[in-house]
Length: 177
Image (cartoon, rainbow, N blue to C red; front, side):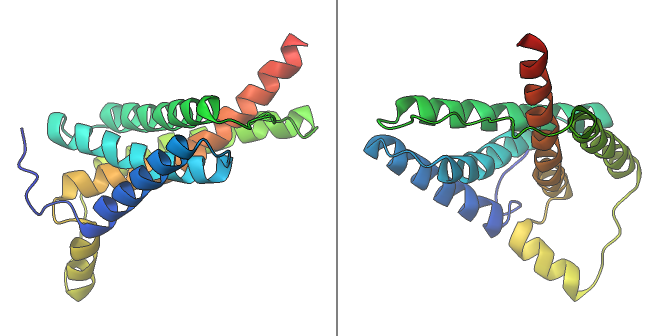
């Protein structure tokens, strides 16, 4: 078990705290704003999953991929919970905008492939950063390279994997019609 101390930077803590505050505030007021729920859920889940993997696991490509999948899953769960609790959620969240099947397949496969390749590189290439730039980055994001690595891979991985998940959802709906 690692010591949290000051190894986690101010940016991840601040964005998670603000995201959690906004998420709870909007749920309690039962307002419907899928964008606010999405952004709040994004930062809360990225921080939560990164912290869990930081505390419990070492860095490996398997752990990185699983942390990204958990982050994306938690984002969708939090958004779904929030939308189900609103008083005026009359619109569907995920709407197929009539994209061609080939485009949906490309968007489903390409971002997920990019994530796997970058995760492999991140897990196998040691970080090299020295000087004032690293000092500033450590102050903002944290001084522990394990947490910072999980946080960054979850940030970019969640964005790419959300694109893939939305495309897979649209493809699934087309096949089920």
